[in-house]
Length: 112
Image (tube, rainbow, N blue to C red; front, side, top):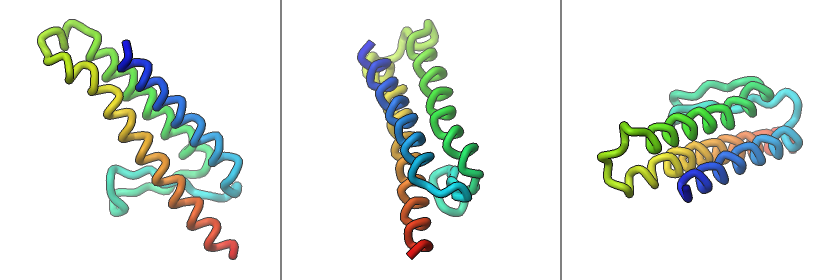
């Protein structure tokens, strides 16, 4: 149960970060969607990028939370069941915040 609460908190933080970025970033901003490195980065339009991060977090939260609560994970070590969904959601939150901070810095540097 605690794992779902922590994962839900991370998901809520992802939504808050996207809402903040929607207010702070200019209309023409492009949001990086990356797979761990700059070389594998796609610059999405602002609205699509700000929706994609929390949507991906919700998918990961639902899939890993569902797997951890299912019969499939019945034989797993309890620590894996309790940590899997919050860890993955936390990593996505860190990627989202990093992408949004980088975009905000880039936008503010261009305006100066």
